[in-house]
Length: 333
Image (cartoon, rainbow, N blue to C red; front, side):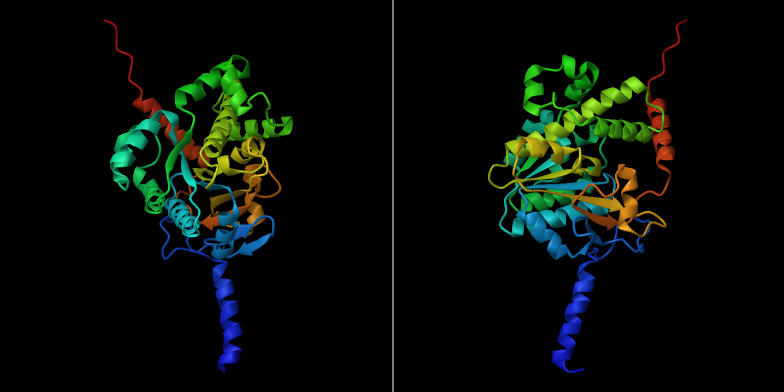
């Protein structure tokens, strides 16, 4: 074929490949050959886009949310790739982690001040092993990418003691200064509140009492607001990237909801890495678990799945482990 006819064909081939941006090899074991695995979906355009198009969009945003499934290694590798791409463009956003809370801020800063590139040492410095999050080695590529690019790592989360206190006290018993700073007195619309409540109930597979669910709804609202504030406070020039669970990245009622109130006019891009499911080969099919008619993210990057067991089966397994780990009451003679 003459070169002048071959060139357009090559362009078409490259464009087709660009819409399926998968790594050299997947780490998650299930559904690696799924039709959607590796594809990037634009909710606004209702079509697949290339990684280059996604990177261009992220680079133009002040706030970037990279929503994950915590134990999926592919999600963290892709987060690391996007952090590198954004930094390569000349941007210098902070990288804030849901998994690190404000009680660990000083330990993190002291460690990185003494050893600026030592990502292995972060886990020990902040007590990651006791945090309950998946193994630090899953998150290490994200930290590596940020530090190699000269970006600053920050905690994003409210500490657990404060979150528990808010869950117990509710709005009426909360510290007035915290209520004002996070705008907790301006809640989600009633419909969204009901949706969050239903999602939390479903996630706990019917085991959580009604009063506990109501407390968790308020605590989650406060945590999302805190993460938004953490992004906004340190991001006047370079912006911020949030590493968090996909539920915190949804545009309708999570961290972006609070960012729009705290920093009106700032450009926000929400990306979720979603695990594919057997038999679901159309992006809109993945909206239902989020309680909406369409995916509540600007972009979705589909990946293989780590675990194919039923979510409630896994939840019951976790409950059993927690109960087995509780100390038994000593017998009184």
